[in-house]
Length: 229
Image (cartoon, rainbow, N blue to C red; front, side):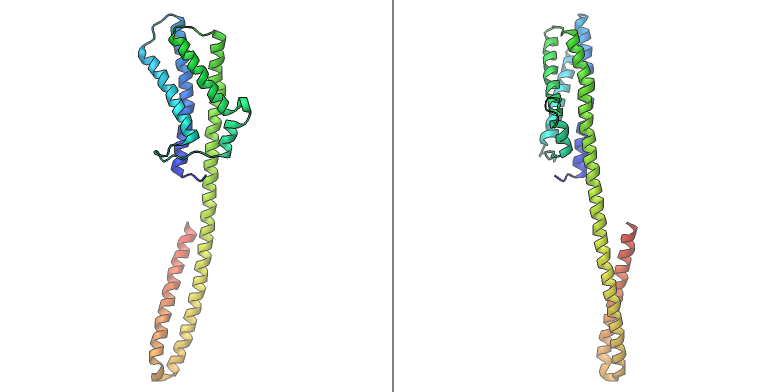
């Protein structure tokens, strides 16, 4: 699928935001765990922050996978992204995200019920967020950036090819214009030799010469402009 520069920009921003959200979620969980472990009250706003962060993460993941027609964001089809998300079966990017969301939901329920999770299990979850999840999201960002770079190179190559074709056509026009001027000049000489009988034909050949000169000058200007691009 060929995406616009704007679409690539949106997707890269979304993937980068996913990375920041995962860090935020990990930090909020550590804070909640410490407060509940120490029997400290947890402000309602704090629960709202972690719930919103998880909700935003789910929405961002859905946007990356399914797109959003109303927002002008098409469904992403990329070999590099598919490799990140699907390769490795249980260690694939998709499996990492699903595990992340499942464990985050379970830990959130436990903390909301004032049930302190097993410390080794919670530490393992924190390490999973800070290593596996972050690495996978970084891989998505890098895949998107590589796709964007390839697409921009493809467009540059296409523009160069088009410019070469245009310049070739202009050069042919110049050749034809010069040949036309030469024919007009020879015709003018013949008309002059014909005296009064060639006067009308001579005026016509002069006009043809002017047209050929105008075409040659215009094509020369276009060639100079193309060479500067």
